[in-house]
Length: 202
Image (spheres, rainbow, N blue to C red):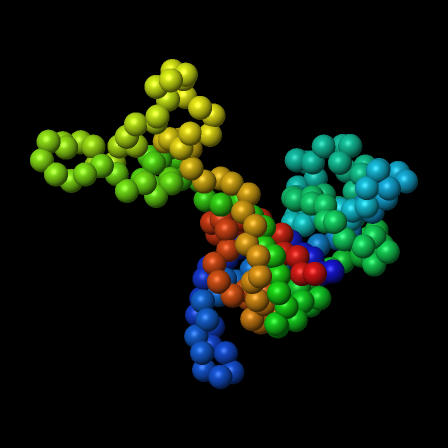
């Protein structure tokens, strides 16, 4: 199992060896440092905790500095459900662990879109565009709660959209630049530019 953290950059067009254009996203991946190895004996489960990004020591709490010891303050700390015997505390992992052709799962927080109606949020078709339908084109219509006279939980209505944790599976690594810690992944990835991404290949 291979894993790394990175920040999303812009999308580009990638030309493969056979001349086919692929939509791709550039990710500034790693380096990440192993900060803790959790085991079933001490923590109740197996996991590898890693730190990514640089953070000022003055903005880091003292308990966190004690936890990091001499590894340095990190901007992001994430746990991965990975084999714990593959790494040691203090090990550094970078983009070089991935190779072109790897199939990865990318996790990130999607863009926040604020309060949206049912047409944009759920793809409702809206009301009829005929005479006598002045402002009902984008209305949700009846919610069908005439019997109990309350709104059922989970009813699709207008509300906050976006800012969700998105898992994008079965993506392909197109290219890897180990020197500059860059991974090129086929397709679109969740979030805006600068979004923290978790990249896992099993």
